[in-house]
Image (cartoon, rainbow, N blue to C red):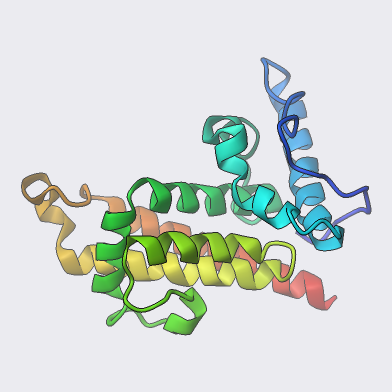
Length: 205
């Protein structure tokens, strides 16, 4: 995450990923995805367009999560592309299951060994507050990408703790989170935290 050549800022919109995918060489798709991720982060950081941050937040909605998956899902977690993919997956889950997210966050916030201020959610943590929180986290991509990743990691860790506290093993009977989701969310938290630390080191060089 340290090699970031200078390019013109990318402006996400309806044509953001038009030329990616479509049966192209997977290696070329990965290369294009890495470049797109670099330009996206740099573009938000350098742009004077006040609406760009909002377009970045809603990128998965405008382009489709499946489209992002084609170019970013296979990227290692410690790359810009991999980190962005995990951020958008987390946001899509919160927006798709806000009540479940709020329930799991509420169960985990008193137990997780992370600062709740880092996760940055309002009190009480209802569905609307969780959606607002995850959007606010993504708005930080241009301002402080390292902190964006660390905040998302803290949030994911609280969710994982909440899932464990709620007893996901009984999910089949209670309509809760399926077994195995605790580990997956904890892995996501660890990946985002590692990416955040790498990004912080890159910023300090």
